[in-house]
Figure (spheres, helix red, strand yellow):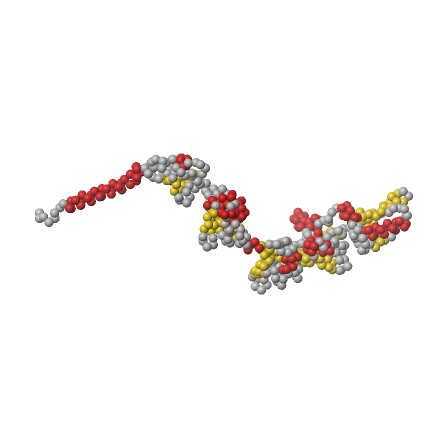
Length: 485
């Protein structure tokens, strides 16, 4: 296999290790260690010792080996196991002061040690990651975890074989950093798959997806992970949806009353816990019709549900819906349909403008408030050249709309007589009516020649038939059939 063909495999195998890096630069790590009294002396640490002799400043470099031994050249070896940087610093400076009084020795850390941590278990693949003594477990596992890695059960095995388990979620939730400790030289981290993962939805303070330990129950999830119910939570109807169960692999849905302190339940992996709002069970009214649409000419009805409280009036709910009313909403002709089938006409436009309680209506559960469509057209029909709908313009007379329709059809209509109807079919006198949207202007067929042309042949045939019948009748009446010939 050529190098060119091997390159993708080499990149796949080694890129994670090339890209893997520890937190901060060397100087940043040294500064952090120098100001923290708890920094542990670590194999690989480099220290600088400066002191003065005969007006000459001398500097010695000290490196800590893998056995936690630090050899100070010309002096002695220090066992620094389980010592902090400041403890080691005090011992070294005391040593120099005893040998060289007045030398003003100063020891500083110049480069904190870097070491490898083996991470294995529920990972993409096991590997050694570079770390230093102020690297936390959560940082190291972030890039190797899988979608099944548990944050609730992480094992850390120290260099002497001691084992302990930590729960990173606890550190994030409560700030207990002992559950997300710094790693140490020689540590091994083992990750495990999670035992249960559930979804918590609805009226809790911290909805989300959570991993659970074996002993945590529904009550724990709501109070600990979820932070407790919100003030509008429907505690009596907590839903647990289980996609499958162990017996027949079929899903189940449970409803529990969590106001009962004795109520609890062990959850299973993939359970979905949903807490509904109390408002979901409040009375509701339905707005229907010209809601939320502004397109002229449309008749597509919309429906919007609005929750109400007992005794709430129409004006209150209508104001909540004001942004849903548009120019095609005919608020003056709205009406309420009650569950018993009765209708209550309401002028919501006037109600919103005046706010008079005497015109208001107390709503009931499941009321339907119908808002009709108001189409801004005038319909011109009958004996005109181009019947149809024409855009409404305020204060325009019927003559204007007849003109838009091409004028009267003179073969069918004579004079200037029209009939005007509103949207309800009520007829108005043409001289008195100020046209309103959706009015109908009808030009009747009244030309005599139209009727002659239309029905003249039929009339002539009828007259001819009648005349023939009369002649025949007279002939028959005047003939004596009893006289012999």
